[in-house]
Length: 208
Ligand SMILES: Cc1cc2nc3c(=O)[nH]c(=O)nc-3n(C[C@H](O)[C@H](O)[C@H](O)COP(=O)(O)OP(=O)(O)OC[C@H]3O[C@@H](n4cnc5c(N)ncnc54)[C@H](O)[C@@H]3O)c2cc1C
Image (cartoon, rainbow, N blue to C red):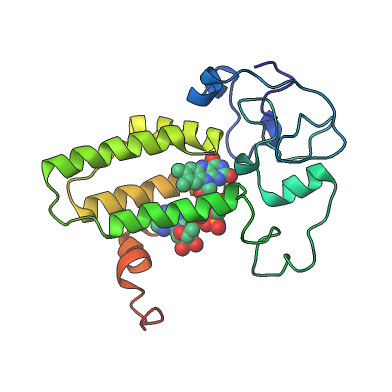
């Protein structure tokens, strides 16, 4: 990947990274895209002449929607969200559009924490092994490539703890907190992960 078609270091939320670190599994398997200015951005777009702040390129050198937040995407395309889609509580794209990095993240954390919430209190050795394999594969396939790289790196230093639901849920919470820290967000109190993801809060607001 050339410097010109690589991730805009200063624009990435979180850490700066090197060209070497950008060589993901998918990048090694893909030929870099042809860079060049385009008039209109769409799913198969080339690299625009000038990238807006926050826009992240994929391994193919093109803007990566699942690696970029929706506001930066609109800034890049120079368009505005359609009125019906943008409200205070909904994303700038309608819900049935491909996800940006935030929508993908929220959905993914919901799945991951929910898996931990339904994990057995006393899992068999086989399930523990399968869970570790799942996390390893998840880390490789996560659609936001720079998120995936950092998650894989974090997992090498923080080996998944899967010997019980409590262990696994706390480990997942720590994984999420590592991303929160990278993004400058508040830390979540991991003693309360089960209230958030399994039992509902003690004040009863999640009770049917
Ligand atoms: C593996 C992974 C790596 C990611 N890496 C990046 C990245 O590098 N850059 C990037 O821009 N985005 C990344 N994301 C997405 C990012 O984490 C958020 O999902 C996204 O920014 C939307 O954030 P949010 O504030 O809506 O809430 P989210 O962070 O998605 O959290 C959803 C809900 O989970 C609860 N929660 C928050 N923290 C915890 C915790 N520690 N434990 C349990 N519950 C918690 C809260 O109730 C919160 O409302 C990643 C997502 C995943 C799954």
